[in-house]
Image (cartoon, rainbow, N blue to C red; front, side, top):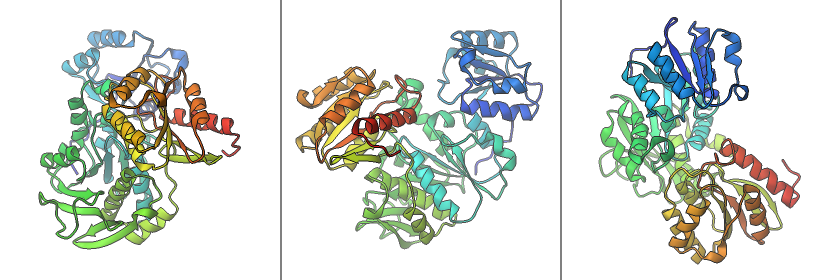
Length: 485
């Protein structure tokens, strides 16, 4: 595991928390317990914020409102901050933050501080898609070993408040986003990169910055650490050259086979698909994990997630038998190809987690029946050209009943679909999300599936993808008269 001298804010230092979301609220409570009193900044107005930390710190200064960055800059110029902790999704290249950093402030985040201070072995999982599913599988497999487990990062509760409870013999599993990695000085000693494709360009600015943020997980490791890479993803595979860790590769497609136990570059092949089975390679011995048609998750992308989770768990002592037992009762996280209702021969699937076009492409490839697809939402500046091509192909195969478009990105998606050859008779743009769901339900026929896989973020209409998925399921159930919850 890579080590950097442990450091955290000290009492008397000047600390700024930029954004009062879940992550920084937990950090505020942690700092206050250690005698560190931060200043608070947020663009929202004060009445819409959770001000619980200020009840514990009545002398703490809160700056709230649209001009919060200007006022932060004034405060820093008057008396410089030692540390500036930013909320994860905040662009790190904002002028006010660049100025603070240039004048000596240490820019950090809740997860970066946690990783720097954590005494237990950490396992980090990142990638452009599949992180939460992989972490949920991995956590279940590791529970079979009997070790005490902590799960956090981009999923679950912030772990910074639990540092004092985490023992050196425990295990910590972290789902790590690009936002959390770009400020990290220390990274987990065991890590997996599931895949890499453009995402979050609205925050990172360009694809190179996004990839650089993700690659910090790799370049921060040291000799003796473990790095697991998806060999079927060319961008992920290339990261091996930047790593000082021992590299292991998995091949969910089976393009790499297990006869030699090595990839063509000479890296250890830890798992692969062969003859309808997912296989683990344990020290040169082939170990069948599960038949692919018995995997309780739809799609090749989810079989890849399962393989990654099993390899990481096996490295920490999980047995194949224990992992099979856990799989037999595994319940996937919500909003990820969640098959939640059926009526009149029509199925309804919530894939609200599909906040990028490539996630939607994976959903299309996982389903063989005719689809009514709901697309659109907040526009992150992604290209929809490849998704349009895949939809056009599915249309030619008779697998697309209709595509309903809504949200900020609707017009741009529609133009991409038109250029890609998707017929106008199956494209329909509607004003609101509610209209999209109603039109999809009306359009579907016996044997079809209504699929919410938007290919976009949710922020034009919802707080996050979870809120969008919950709302989608509620409307569908009301429309079809499904009383189940």
